Image 1 (cartoon, rainbow, N blue to C red):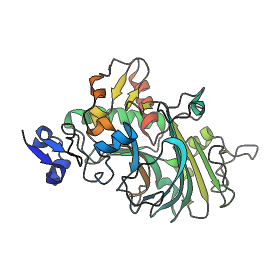
Image 2 (cartoon, rainbow, N blue to C red; image 1 turned 120 degrees about the vertical axis):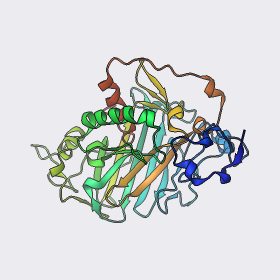
Image 3 (cartoon, rainbow, N blue to C red; image 1 turned 180 degrees about the horizontal axis):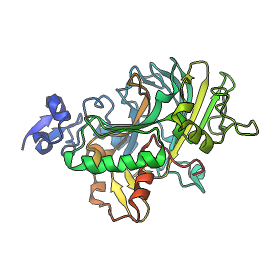
Image 4 (cartoon, rainbow, N blue to C red; image 1 turned 90 degrees about the vertical axis):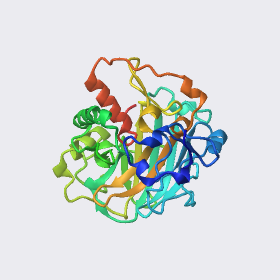
Length: 350
């Protein structure tokens, strides 16, 4: 069996669907071998946690993403920097964005369980800050993007599921299952809570009212009050309502997004009692992200990578087998997958 250092991997191996690399043993930076075919892509390599990092911080680690240009976490340009997922605030900046982040995930020793009491959500992320350059509002998106092509055997079924998701979730969703698979949706049609305020008047990050009237005076109901989250999503899902709108540096934006499908301690999609899917077996070393992107320029505004130890390394957890059973409704599955993947999004009251 061929044994390689990560630095010896030929570039074309990273972008191939299937290659002899899946049968080679590739060593990580600590000398511990990666799972077969699950070494990090070179575009993520500068953020990929080592075996030692997982042993120090636990099986779930959040880092930066080298694909976000000049991104810094708490002032550090090292994208391997580990940031908190316990509800405490940290700073983030890039060529496009400057602000603060709170990320809180359920089911970890560091979790504040009271914050999730009575709620279905499994993770909650809040961004607050200002953009450094204006952009068209219709191109301000959240979602997921991947850097490895899907195996041909899986491509058609994934395309079918995501196409159904786009119809159920948002008319504005963009999907590709090509060389770099992705699915993104405009922030205005997807985030659970969205607020635009003047600098110095931004709300408390945990107690954010829904209000984008400073951005668009039309975003009010018949009583002149700010549209609710649901009504705002529906209003901007009509593409003509976003035409001519620009996100500019003069406003402070606060975004809330939460999800109730992806269980981060196990890295499994929980579709209810009928279906559980282990993502480490599907993603082949690619992390799920918390990201926002300008789809007109292709620039990432900010991006965090959520790594699980089993994405990259063998562990005792591999002895667990997830049960995959037929679901009662394929449309229901597609809808729930959409709410779990599209930028960590879900129902507004969950």
